[in-house]
Each structure stands twice: as structure tokens, then as C-alpha cells.
Length: 466
Length: 173
Image (cartoon, rainbow over all chains, first blue to last red; front, side, top):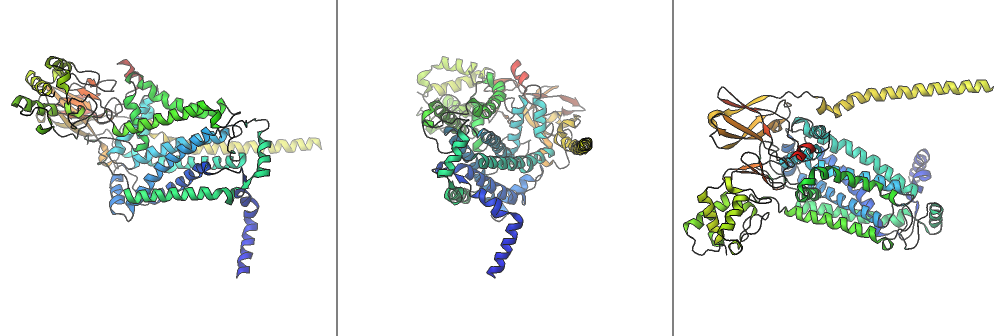
């Protein structure tokens, strides 16, 4: 029996060349001490494979049609066995992939692994980063709830700001003049066929380059990269100190990826899939579109950017970022690799990191959005202990006229405008009237909206807040 | 001998060129329908339609109401996405204004706050007055309007593409 199996294996091996061609690749030598810092790329790859597998499973249950997609989402979430967990894995897998691709990129940048001869590794990596972000965005659309519908409108609006061809780009994205039957078909094709095919292609290329150029050795301060001598030096390093990738280095990749995937599944079981917002009905306007967390920094940026430069920045910002990313290995491809000796590079990474995280944090709070859900201020929460009817009506008007959506009084209301809990101490009645009638930077002028009587009542109420 | 080998090479060269040419022809032939599918939205005709959204008497002067209508040429499989909506304001006996529901900042759905007499956008805090002018926040220009007409006591709105704020439009205001 054992003999027969051995014979079969020998035959297969001879005809396929596994031992001859594949094993040397798996066991190719890698520099020693390439330890835990090197696990993020492979973990990203495993997350991608997880996305492919769970994506295929979801496609068995999903209806890629503008008409029925939402119903099938409800089916997957509420009825299908393990459907909610499956969606959850796909969602948390996407989140993990975006985080890991970010960490991988930061690691490569701060250890300057993009320098000679690995420039093309970096460039193919940037393409993969862009593909990953695009997948994250289109994936959110495929949920085809009200969030999905309005997010696609927002994306079309952004494309619309492109000079000359903006309108056509927006039209191409939506598949027509308006959201309609053709919209989801296109998003489905982007998310399921076109971009995954590109990712497969570029992952293949990226891995081929890893084999061709070898993984970068951990940097050492003072050891410079010289394109003239580097390849020979690297070859020698591998010859003298190299260890086989499998199993000496690969076990860390496998362990880390397995832990990540187990964490993703735990998150999916614990939290389930992200909740669906309402029907994908473009006629239902009482909805608050909000992107998934990984798109929130963009969302925040558009709210905070000075409005005058917005149109230009909406186009130039992403374009410039992409150009800079692609040009990094050409700006400097030799010399020092150690982060200790490249303080400006480190400083840049910290700046970008802080910028993106701040945008994420503030975007999740979205202080610029009116709080439509706020409740009318109860009389117990106002300063006046025995309010007369003018003040009581003022409290009601403060809510009805939308003031409370943006102004907070004692934990009731929004935070876009100043907190008015003690406004009576800062402004007198006349000053309050001027503010309310004329409005301000982000505040409408209420002169044409409030009657004199209404204005007086609101002012009476606000003056009593002292 | 040397003559013969030259001939051989030119013969091979000939076939190489033919084969590459044929491959090119087949690629182009496939590309035509594939690219057509890719840019299909740009190739479609855009005939807009007048859609009835209600009777004149349904709308009181001074009020702003949500109206819904079917897009110009909905696909049979569009389901609810065949619909668009607008905010219809009756300014006086014979005049109506129909505002697109899309914020001119980034297209989010603005809602009419009837007591406050303002349109408000949930996304980035854009606010508009009842006449569609910007009252606050990031929007670069007033709410876009649909064409409206009155026909036999009915209010009709002319369908239009989702209003995209282009870079020029936002500069001019």
C-alpha cells in the first residue's frame, strides 16, 4: 500500500515538477532576523483569501439586482443559516484587510524596503492598496440599503467635480442619469469581477517580485543601500546566513494570519453583520447616510475642508496622494534604510497617522451634522425654576425652529453651534436678537423665518439661561 | 545558402506579422461589444419626461411637500430605484418650484423642516432657506430645481439627471 502511494506520488511529482520547481520556491532562503515585523503582508493576503471565500459564499445567497438586492440582504441577515455571521466575517474581514494593508505599508515605508531593487514591489503594492480601498467602498454599496444608494450618489458627486469630464464620470459610476436598475449591476461587476481580477493579477505580480528581489533584510543604521553592489551583497547574505522561508520564517506568517482570522470570526459571532439602514428607495429622504468606518476619514475631510478650496481639493487631494505614493521609490531609492537615521520619514508617517486617526475620530462623532433625533428640552433641564408662559413657548420654539439640532443646552441638542446652556450670561437680549436675525458662519439668518413674537419668546428663554 | 536562410527568416517574419495582426483584429473585435457594455451609460439616449406629481389643489400656497415620480426611462428591473423625489413648493396661486432633494455639496438627501422653514442636510450640515438659497454649511450653490408646469389642474415635473455640482458651477457662486 505504502509502496503504491509512493509510486503514485513519484509519478505525479515527475510529471508536474513539484519537487523540482515548487519546493525551492517555498524553501527559498530569506534573511535571518526577519521576524514579526514581516507578517503583515501575508496576513493581508490571507484576509483577501478569506474575503474571496466568504464573498463566493455570499454570492450564493445574494441577488445582484437593484430591485431585489435589499430583500436578499434581509434574507441573508435574518433567515439564512449562519448568514448573519457570514456577512459579519466578510465585513470584519474587509476591515482587517484595510488595517493590515495600512500597517504593511507603514512597515515597508519606515524600514525603507521600497528602495533598490524593490521599487516595483512598492508600486504594485500601491495599486493593491487602491484596489483594496475601492473594494471597501463598492462592498458597502452592495448592501443596497438606503446607505448604499446615497453613498453611490455621494461618490458620483465627488467624481462630478472633475474638470470637463466630471458629469460623464458620475454617469458612468451610477450607470445612468439617476440611480436605477443598472446601478447595482455595475457595482456588482466592479466588486465581484473587475477589481478582484486586478487584485489577483497584482498579488501574483507582487509575490513574484518578492521571490525575484527577496524580502528586504531588517535595516541597520549606517548600512547603506548602494544599487551598484546591493544585489551581490544580498546574495552573499543569503548564502552565508539565509534561512529557508518554509518553515523557519513562514510559521510566524501562518500563526499571525490564523490569529487574525480567528479574531475576525469572533468579532463576527459577537457583533454580527453591520445593521442595514432602510429600503434603497431614493424617494425616502429621512435617512442619514454614513459610510463604513474606513471611509469616515474622507467623509470628515469633506465636512471640515474650507469650502472655497473644496472643489479643487476633492480632485487634487486624491490625485496628489496617488502621485506621491507612486513616486516615493523614485524620490529616494538608495542610502539609509534605518528609521532612526530617517527622522523626517518617521515624522511624516506620524503626521499622516495622526491626521487620518483624528479625521476618523471626529468623523465618527460628526459634530457638524444636525441632530435630528434630539428630544425637546424638558422644562426640568432649563435654568428658570418657575418659567412663565413666554419662556415655556420659547423652549418649544427653540426645538420646533431647529435651533436645538445644532445647539446644546444641558445635554439636549446638537453640537455644531455653540453650547447655549449659559448664553444669558454672555449676551443680552438685544445681542441675542442680532445673532438670531442675521445668522452667522454656519447659522441661517432667522430674520425671514421667525415672527417678531416668536423671536421675542426665544430670546426670553435664552436670556433666562444664566 | 545565405540567400535561402534570408528567405526563411522573411517567411517566418511574414507569418509572425500575420499572426500578430490576426490576434490584434480578434482583440479589437472583442473589445467593441465589451467596451460598449462598459460605457453603456454614456451611449444611452436621454429623453426626459414630464411626470404628474399631483393635483394643484393638493398643495397649499406657502407649503413645501415631498413628491415622488418615476425617472425618465426606468429599467423593468429597477424596483423602488425607478423613483426620484423632489420638494415641491407652492409659492402662490399659479407658481410652483420643485427642488431636487440632493444637497449641492455632495448629494445627500436634504429634508424639509416644516416648522423651521429650512432644508437641512444630514451629512455635513448644509442648510437652505425655503427658496433654496444656501443658509449655512458647505453647499456651494442653491438647491437645484426641476422644471415644473401646470397642465389641466395637474402639477408636472420634468425628469432630470441627478444634479451633479461641477467644478465650474461651484466656482461661480
